[in-house]
Length: 248
Image: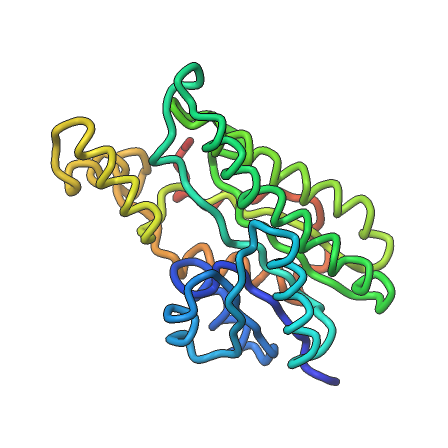
């Protein structure tokens, strides 16, 4: 059988990079995409640089994957922006709201719109969206991020209903705090705002979980890789929390 073709967004670092490498190790033909060509080049897989917050960027990533590797069987939507720059809702800059939705929700919709129809025609597909524990719970000063991550779960579940009859599954993973570059930026912002050290911020985050630590990207990536596999054919429309047993 011809190897499955996977497109992994946000694949230059963190969770996306680890997921892409796991899928490649499982025998898939993997394309990684993000905005930073320098980061993508270091992954060691096929890559295409694109702004996934625009319809044109999403179309470019999908078209390049199909041209170079073949039709997309597996879509991992992992890119996004965080909430470190947000404010209380009455102080929120509408530009922040629009930018967050453009990247975190409009992009995932465009990517799904461009790929799911082909999956249904071929009778096979796997979609996995990286949401967040903020997709089910709210944080202070994070209206745009929280709303976008709630929306990602809804999108994944809606696709599960539309595409489920065609052997296409769609699920979301909801990580807690993960030691990624995006989370490091938010830690630095929080530390500066509160007048404490970055190490203290991370210690507080770790204290939220029974294991008294935060996640490593590979731990989330392993769940994503499972949901992309044939073994996960019975899992559809789910929002799976990966948070060390914590409530956040």
